[in-house]
Image 1 (cartoon, rainbow, N blue to C red):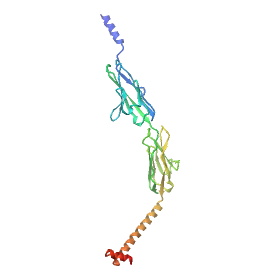
Image 2 (spheres, rainbow, N blue to C red; image 1 turned 135 degrees about the vertical axis):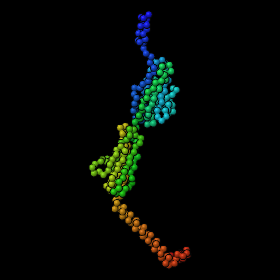
Image 3 (cartoon, rainbow, N blue to C red; image 1 turned 45 degrees about the vertical axis):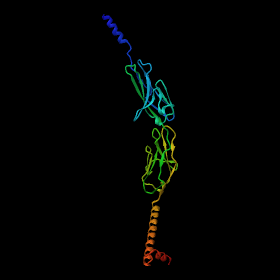
Image 4 (cartoon, rainbow, N blue to C red; image 1 turned 60 degrees about the vertical axis):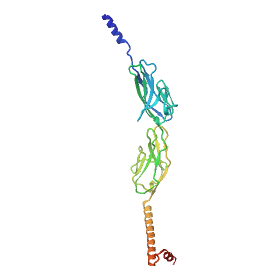
Length: 267
């Protein structure tokens, strides 16, 4: 009897343990260029279930289905295929970036559900940046030029040009450059800073892109002051002449009624 019990225990210890459904991925992080194919790998193994249920979901503010009940859903329909549990998305765009979850259901297994996440990052080359260059500015004032490309992934860095020459910061340059934010900031502009300015955005994915050059005119302060003085003098003379006309009209008694006013100006 003792030998029989011992034999049973040995057989139990050496028998293969039953395994629940397991799900894994050979590549948890995927990076591809825009408009290329993205392979989201998912491998699984079941204990007893011969026909497990496979689902893919995209995580975000709301979890949405990618592959459900044997077909691709919504924007993924017609541009994806599945092999086993591995999904290939065709011609991906930045909108496809995100975290995807592969779920395998095996009702006949002890553990009936397994899942794994795959992160997809779609790389986008530089786009033509939006450049903000003021048309004119008074000499002696500070001014800031802006450049922004919101579409490139990874985020673009920026380079500024004046008259097709790349700007670099030196001890006496009189301006600051922020290549990450795309700003060109002058502390105090002079007439020498007038010229054509353009900005270039670039990243590691594709060729740089540049905006159309825009002209910045620095107006000399003395010239602008002269213009202001001349305008003020002209306005003063205009007001003076109007007042003089009114005074003369009253002195001659021409402003008592409309007929007299007309006769007054015709005398």
